[in-house]
Length: 117
Image (cartoon, rainbow, N blue to C red; front, side, top):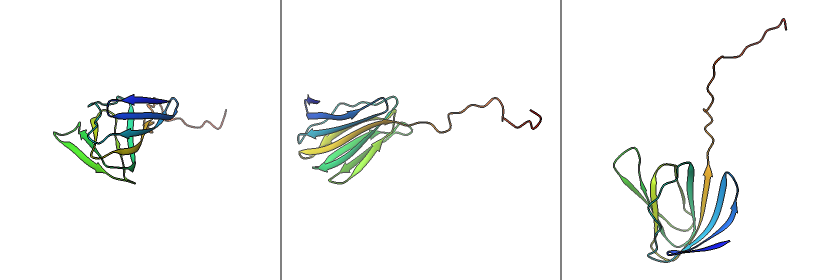
């Protein structure tokens, strides 16, 4: 499924309840909206061209700018405002995924063993 964007277009390759994979083409000078995701990580892998990804860090007053070229990748964690802009015509793969919190358990007891039962 291909969708037009003001900056180019995106093509959804796969999507399910925990993962999305898109191929995006961004025209030189094109940029997406400033946005954040509540729960999803946002990853980028560049096939061709040059892309700048701006990330407004949530824990300090700074905007990180990462310049990506062919073969480069990066990820933006949930809750951070970010946007991209193309320095030249760019083809990239954009991924979204949710990450399980491996420490999400809350215990009321430690368990045990009763050899008499």
